[in-house]
Image 1: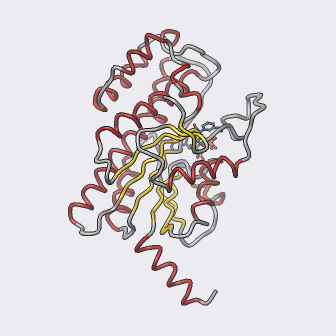
Image 2 (image 1 turned 45 degrees about the vertical axis):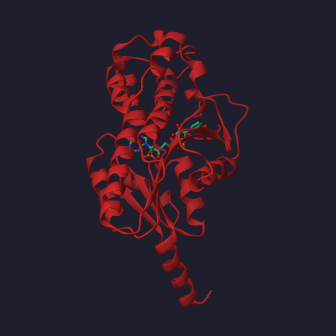
Image 3 (image 1 turned 90 degrees about the horizontal axis):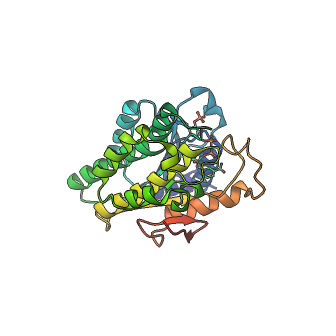
Length: 283
Ligand SMILES: NC(=O)c1ccc[n+]([C@@H]2O[C@H](COP(=O)([O-])OP(=O)(O)OC[C@H]3O[C@@H](n4cnc5c(N)ncnc54)[C@H](OP(=O)(O)O)[C@@H]3O)[C@@H](O)[C@H]2O)c1
């Protein structure tokens, strides 16, 4: 490809393309998603959030890949960087993918508090901040930027795994403020009153169920002409999260990535819903 043609394509993608901001980019799914978005026409840049600098070598080498430090233990620095990315960008859409998560075994107050912080509260904080940055950008710029928020959830976050009384309690929550307050007090509760099928990782199940509730509530509160919020269950695939389990229904990583890629980029996947391989999962 002649150099001028490559530069033209780069320029076109920058004025009409999408910018992807991805958390947990150095994990198994994060790396695969980074690679897939970098192969996609009209992607103007992939901003890859990482917490461990020694894992940067795992990311694909590409002119449009921009790693940035994002540690969910303290999101302050990462959020500042995201603010700068959005204020400077010249694309027509931001795609935020809340992918980073932990999946600890067992249940005690600290494990629950920590899991809810990383898997639920951080995606909420980042999503709210990104939505504010985009709103601010749109107030001062003529060219409006759209926003897609993709929450990487899990089949474990389906409501069927929650105790009926708890499920009713959760469904009564009607605003994001109420949900945040609710999450902040949950570690004081007995897990057996919350999660129906404890399994080995009840904190994880709960954190993903709450992430899905966030998808619904935030979607109701945003301007849906410009912003969309969806949850995606990737399906099961081999990573540190599944390595210790005897799962027989593991999916190929390319299939998993393709399922998320299409939902992330196509607005036919409606706001407020929960998808697996492009199909709606009841929530
Ligand atoms: N594997 C499955 O079968 C499966 C099934 C359903 C849903 N999911 C979801 O898929 C997503 C990706 O998981 P994965 O399977 O790819 O697991 P993974 O390889 O362990 O990736 C998790 C990512 O989260 C990052 N992370 C964890 N704590 C963090 C923190 N405090 N600050 C910043 N980043 C942090 C990790 O950073 P490091 O790279 O530094 O470790 C890693 O990049 C998760 O949301 C998970 O719940 C996975």
